[in-house]
Image 1 (tube, helix red, strand yellow):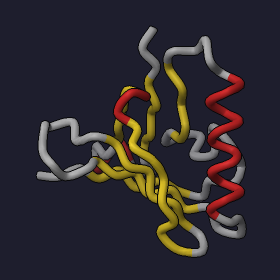
Image 2 (image 1 turned 30 degrees about the vertical axis):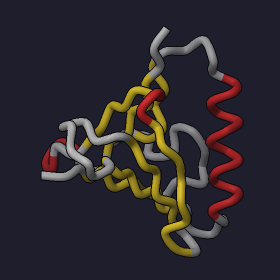
Image 3 (image 1 turned 120 degrees about the vertical axis):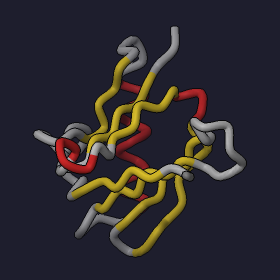
Length: 106
């Protein structure tokens, strides 16, 4: 069974910035700053550049956010569609999430 992670920016209705990534394309997470984590996925357009989702988690460390993500994935192993963040509920996975920014290469 394929599993997917969905990320939708708070302004997705005007920016159209959202991403649905197969879990198999997940490459890893890196600290972006003290209050953000960058999640890397294989490029959806076949490019050598990763698709990136930047998650802002103000007031929480990158390690704490990464731990929450692992717990979420482990607890939902039978659910094929995992909403990490969406327009109406940015903190779908955890209340640590303040915002998300979805970007992919042109």
